[in-house]
Each structure stands twice: as structure tokens, then as C-alpha cells.
Image 1 (tube, helix red, strand yellow):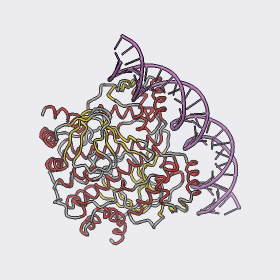
Image 2 (cartoon, helix red, strand yellow):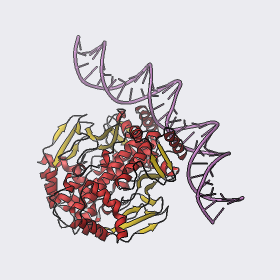
Image 3 (cartoon, chains in turn purple, orange, blue, brown):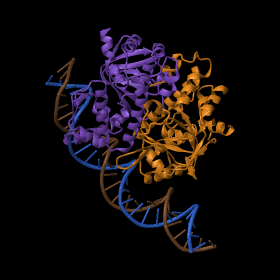
Image 4 (spheres, rainbow over the protein chains, first blue to last red):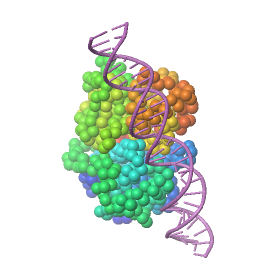
Length: 266
Length: 266
DNA sequence: CGTAACATTGACCCCTCTCAAGTGCCGTGG
DNA sequence: CCACGGCACTTGAGAGGGGTCAATGTTACG
């Protein structure tokens, strides 16, 4: 049990940034979670076209949201670190429009939709926080869309690194200036939409500028201000601020609409 | 009143594709809507940094989701047509992370958060459909992320056109092979992340292949199969299929969790 | 110590960019 | 009715970021 709660720590940490999560709510989440499962690297967690019966949380390790193009090219549209759900949206959308696969050894925890439903029914504040993180994920996607379409490789990579570091900090898995990022250059290429060769060159550029180190699967940011500047990185879009309504009072009795439309978004 | 219901027709149409919308629910939506407002082209509907007090629906005309980069470059990450909300997510995210501005004369209808809350409280099925379209919007964003990062201009443009036509069909504002698309080439450039010059050349290519016509703000698709092929366009991601749970029975008494977590997503 | 997987480098090419000039359309004012 | 200016669209030429192909280092590990 203690083991399981450790596994959910990153999620709790992330949710707590945006609003309080009561002990009771933590327990409810723990109860809804299945036994952890371990997957080796390179395994699919869910596949495009699947209709998952629950949501899967990454508890440890690194996974990626992957789409395959007609020409066989692989595209990574997001990295999932500890504390990220890979398919929370499948409950409404039903069919997965992308694959989630492990990039390293990964520990996952599964939450059946039925259990989630029961839990969120009872704890609307918690439901609200989960939806909020869902919306934040979309906000991050929008950000990536801008960056990927507009910035040259150097700036784009700076943004990717800063985003990764910020998100790792959010769930408490980062040191002051470094965090795990155990991917291959080819993975970065798939994530940035450039060739692996050019990833290599861009990386060298960033190193030559003494802005980052990246070896043995660990990212170290040497010049954060410089990186932020290059990437025009502003973590406002991660919505790190505390959400007024969730953290304190909130008139959200279960069943009130407070936990429905008002907490979603376009 | 009749006028107002005409304005909501595209929204109803879109929602109906995914689940039934009862007469009573339509009335509720109509009641929640403010008087329509008309804006000229080039006006901001909401600005980045705003904290809107409600959600705004485009009832007529064309708007765009815009972000401004440091170098002054404008990025369009989405076009909003009739039936699209421009800021539904602001209710949870609170602060807008992008601007929505009109590209033509636009008629908007405003829904105060409070009214939406009351309405969705009473009609969970309706709430569910609204959230669903919210999630579909994110799915479309993910799709754009893939396309924009991976495809050369010609294929990218093919995708943009097909997506626009499909969405226009969805809300009933398209003929068999054509729809309004009153933007400048410079807007297309901002949307695709390429220069206006190259938009022009790409457009000429597409025309030379007899695949599209585009004049006087109207798009006509001459070779849909060809376009779809170029763009690897598969409108599955628009989730046109009927949602089982929403359309028929559904055990969703108001207040049940059915309309909470289970209907959101990551 | 051989092999496989990943990182690095070099050479050459193409897509898209920028700069810059030219064309066409349309609304306004004379 | 025509001249004019503005705006959008076109076209041309040269430059550059990033792509591909292919070879060479470099580890990690059986």
C-alpha cells in the first residue's frame, strides 16, 4: 500500500499545485488504482484504435504519445512522465487516436473508468483537478503547435528542454537544474519533426553555447535564462498558479454543475 | 427569438452529430445565450491574458485563434467557424493563453459561465456533448501538430483545406464540394507556419493539379480523393460517429458521475 | 573482442525563406 | 468617368536551414 502511494506521489504533487487534495481524496484515488504493472522499454501501453476501459497513469519512467504517418514516419507529440495520464480522454472520445508507448522501463497504474466515475462522483473537487490537468495538457499541445511550426531547430529544442524540465519540477522529479530525460536523439527528432542528424547538430550548438548538458539520459540546464530566452519560454501555459475555486471553499457539493461544464474548456 | 435559434443552428447541428439534443435542451441553451453581437473584421473577441466571465460562440463568420511570437510574427493555431466556441476552456483555465480575433464580420453569442453552469447542471447529457466537442477540439489540435511538423507545404495545405471543408460540412454550412473560407493568403501563411510567398506558390500547385479552386473567399474542392490522399486525411479524428451513451438511453441522472470524469480526457 | 546500437561527421541537394519588383483589383475623390 | 492609392496577389532571384545518404566513431555488452 505504501508502495502504491509512492507511485501516485507525482500525480498528487501535480494536482496539489493547482488545488488542495485532501487525505480522503488521496485515499479514494489509491483505492481506485489497480496494482502497478511494469513494462519494458518499447512497449505499447495503448494503441491507436483501442477503446480503453480505463485510464492509465505513468507512475515511473518515460512514455510517449506516438502517431505513425503513411510513409512509416513516427511522430512523437508528447512525452509522458511520472504523474501523467496517457489516455484520460479516451473515456469520452472512446477511441484512441494515437498510441502511447514506453521509451524506458515504465511502471503504470490503471484506473478503470467505473472506479473513476464513482470516485469523481463522490469528490467533485478532485474531479475538477483531474479535468483541469486535462485542459492544461491541451494548452501545452497548443503551445507545441506554435513552437513547432514557427521556430527553427535551435529554439525549438530549447523549448522542448525547458518544457520537460518544468514539468519534471512540477511533479518533483527534478533537481534544481537537471532531470531525467532518457531518450535517444532519434526520439528527439521524432518529437521535433526534424531529422536525427539535425538533432545532433542542434544539440552540439546548444552545448557549444554552454546552455545544456545531456548525457546518460540526464538533462542538465546550465543557462536557464538563456534557454528561456531562445525558446520564448513562459511557463504561464502550464498554469502553475493555484486555482482559486479548487483550493479553498468551493461550493461544489457532489452533483452540482460546478464540476461539469464550468470546469472544462474548448 | 427565431433569429437567435438560427444563430445556434450550427452548434445544434454539430452536437446532434454526436448525440441527440432534445427540444428542451435546445431551449435551455437558447435561454442561456445573450443577445447576439456583431463585430467587424479584425477585432479581438478575447485577448490573451483575459479572464472571461463566460464562453463565446461564433454564430456567423470566421474567427481565428491567434498567438503572437516575440519577433512580432502572428500564428494562427485554429480557425473558428459558426458553431465553434472560442474560449470554452477559459472557465477552468481562467486565463486565456491566446487571442481570438475576427477575420470577417462575425456574429457572436455569449454564454455567461453562471448560466452554463445552471444549464449543464440540469442537462448532463448536454454538458457531456459540450465537453465532447471540447475534447474533439484538442484531438484536432493534436492532428494539426502532426501535420504541421511533418508534412511539406503542399500536403499540409491539402490537409488544412480538407479539415476546413469537413468542419463546415459538420455544421451544415458547406455545399457538396465547397464552403466559405474568406481569408487572405497571409492568413493561411500564419496558419501553416510558412511564408505568404510560399502559400501562393503552393496554392498554384494545388490549382495546377486541378484539386482545388479558391477565389472570392470561397473554397471548392475539385478532387477530394486526391486531396485526402495528399494530406493522409482521415476524418476519424473529428469523431463523427454517434456517441453511444449520449444518443440513446444513458443512465445519466443529473449529478451522477457519468457527466464528470468519465467524459473528459487527457 | 565482436557486434549491435547509438552518436557524430561530411557532402550534396531541395524546400522554403527573404528581398524586391510587378500586376491586378477596387474604392475614393476629382 | 478617370486617376489614384492601397491592398492583395504574383513572380523572380539568390540564400539558407534542414534533409538524405553514407561513412566513421564510440560505447555497452554478451
